[in-house]
Amino acid sequence: MTAAVDARGDSDADLVAAWRGGDQAAAAALVARHTRPLARFLAAAGAEEDLDDVVQETFFRAFDRIESFRGKSSFRTWLFAIGSNALKDLGRRRTRAKVLSIEDRDVPDVRHGPHEQVVGRELLERLGEAVSQLPTMQRNVFLMRAQHGAEYADIAAALGTSVGAARVHYHHAVRRLKVALE
Image (cartoon, rainbow, N blue to C red; front, side, top):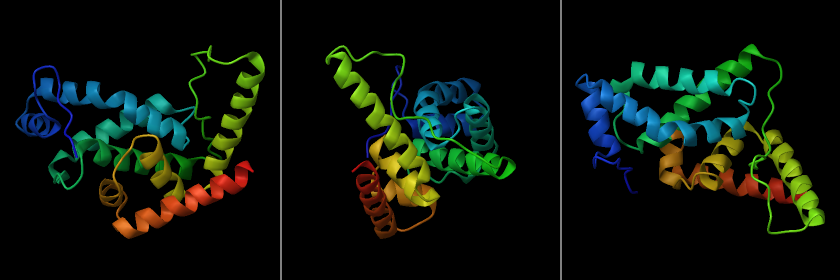
C-alpha cells in the first residue's frame, strides 16, 4: 500500500499527525487530496443529488473523529467508510436513492463513431442501474475495488468485515453484474 504524498512531501500519516496537533493547513491538504476520489465514490454509491452535502458531512465527521483513525487502513479508505455511513444515514432519511452512471458525461469519446458511443453509453447506463441494485455491502466492496483499486485488506478494514468476506462480496457483485448485462 503506497501512501499519498503532497507537493511538500507529506504523506497522509504526516498530515493526520499535523492535524491532530492543530495544523489547519494539514487539514486543508487532506481535503484537497481526497475530495475528488471521495466524491466519485459517493456519486457512484448513490449520492447523486446531495453529493456536495455528503462530501462535506464526510469530512466533518472524519475531522470530528480524527482521534479514532488508527492507520489500519489508508486514510482514503477510512474516509470512504465514513462517507458510506453518511450516505446510509441520508438514505434512511430518503425513501429512494439513485446511483450515477459510471461515466464521465462531460468528456465525449472521440475514439469511436456515433454508433459505438451510443452502444457504450447504453451499456454504462445498464451497468449503473445494475450496480444500484446490488446489496449495499456488495455495491460498496465493488465500487471500492473496481473504481478505486482498493486492496481487499483495506476494504475489509473500512467496511468492518474480513478479507475473505470482502473477496466473496466482490465475487458475488461481479457475477450479478455479468448476469444483469447479458
